[in-house]
Image (cartoon, rainbow, N blue to C red; front, side):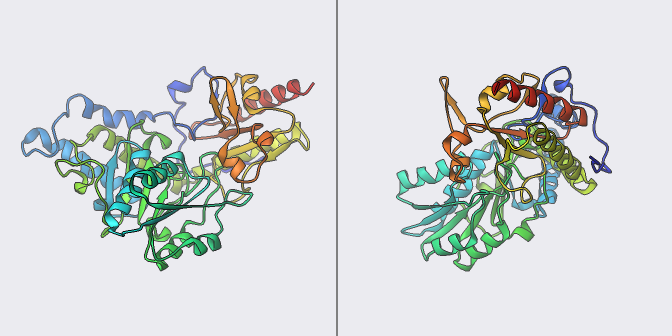
Length: 398
């Protein structure tokens, strides 16, 4: 198979991946890029000043914070003033959803989301119902995990203040028709929030093209450390703050700014922009397709794709293999590090709610494995991983 090569050089193998299993769980978290670490390190050592103060120690932290905000904004085709740094994607989602509902002033607010959203969105919606009596509609998805715009059109009403639908699913990579959905929301004067934690850095995300009012991006999904994220808030959108206090981050998130984490996200955003422009996603998609081809060739008729073949993230492969359970398959293939997408509690396993919402039976859903590739995935990794999975699958069905 011919794999398109990017014009952006592939960085040396991440030191944390050397000698370990083939890492195929980039959707869970990414290794922190050494270039990101290099940029943020001075801000946890010598550049310790509070950027909100006025003396010399604040100058460099304040400049770095400004540059980081600009880099994130550039990746999203936004203005720097529209970027609010947060400590996680879950916090950003809650700020967007709770903030929009409470700021709306509507006496009977209605929120719309969909069945395969990240738990951070679904839990935020449930909390609004429990604490504030907010009416929430959860839209179904089709067999590929995609929302039908007609279903959204039917659900919208005069009380709808917010629609929250993700850009791409973390388990299957299924991409939603965000621009079409946002347009429908705006026709009913509702705001549109998009959790783009999985999509940011993997596919172009220009908020001007998508037409969204709020968008979440997460650092540890794009080679920055955990506990760093951002929320795009379109100019003019009013939100009730989540954290009250000193007025940082446009008054939406009080607390002294975490400059090091913001710098990390800014550098990660610049690296992602370079890779998007340089064709790296095409290379990763080629490796993903090669991996699926090797599995299908080794197990004729037994490998089934979960989710869409085309409208998905370039790095994500979610498959189920007849006659196997996902957790047992991965346990029998220690050469790779991947996940199933299903929940495990005290030794018991339950099927992925994402897959069952798509109409996959509970038994078939238990057979799923999610293989997500990334910046340091190589052709050799694909060969090793496919061989390990084939061996494990063939052994399991003897």
